Image (cartoon, rainbow, N blue to C red):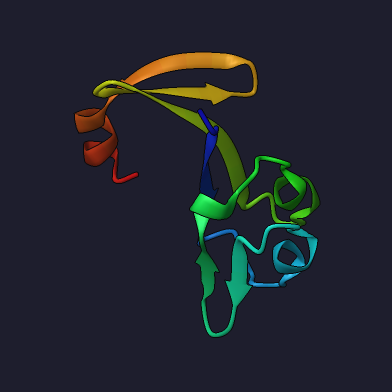
Length: 90
């Protein structure tokens, strides 16, 4: 099974500098008037997260397991029900 990644951009911190667009080898980001994210293209290399000068980007591995989702965040794993994710607005 191909690993999937969740790409989160904090719009309050992002100043749209375009470094993520330049650094991403998979073309996840595009920038015109707004920053557009195509998370399905993400391979989890975290270059965008490392090079973002505003610390506005977070990448987390996500694995589908039945009706639950398992998120792996920097060594921590937690089970998340889909309803919880919807309430959190993610």
